[in-house]
Structures are given as C-alpha cells and as structure tokens.
Image: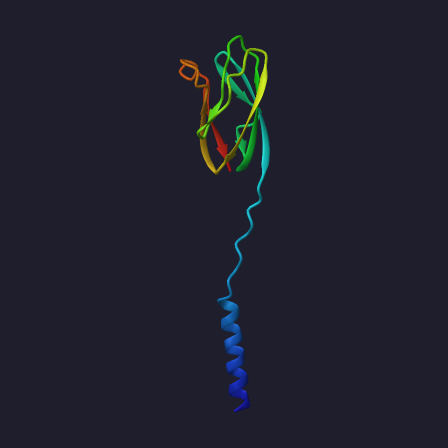
Length: 117
C-alpha cells in the first residue's frame, strides 16, 4: 500500500512539473540613436538596422534646402539648411519606410527603408 501511495505522489509531482507555466522571456526596452544626414536629394543613415524600442533620429541637414524626416506615422519639423534637430519614436519589429514629406523630395530620392529587429 505504501508503494502505491508513493508511486501516486511521484506521478502527481511529475505531472505538476510538466504542466507548470513557464514565464515568457522579458523583452528588454532598448534605446538607440541613428544619425540621419540630409541633403539634395538623399538621406544617409548611420545604420540601416536597429533594435526595436525607442529610436532617436539625429537629423543633420547638410543641404541647401529644408528637409524633414517621416517614419511610422511620425514626422520631424522641417530642418533648415545647415541646422539639426531630433525625432524620437518607438518602433516595433519590421521594415519601416521613411521619407522626406516636402513636395517632390521623396520622388527625387529622399526615401528608404529601415530594418527594425
């Protein structure tokens, strides 16, 4: 009888361990900075891949015209020639298109895609 009780207790313990919930790994919130150089008519990003989370875009206009930077529904102010600014957004994983929204600038080449991992 003692053997059956012990066997049953071991079986219950084994089943409990087998179905115990496993905590999902915690996602670390990351913060990254990307320098975006703007000039007629292109963007040059300091990196083309970034981890998901908060991303600050340091915008540096080295062109002769004003430019802005738009990504994932967020848009910077227009950055005057030879000035700089920032845009901070939270990005989820995926491919994120970006562009200058000033008339004709994206069509002239001021656009691209950022990979968010």
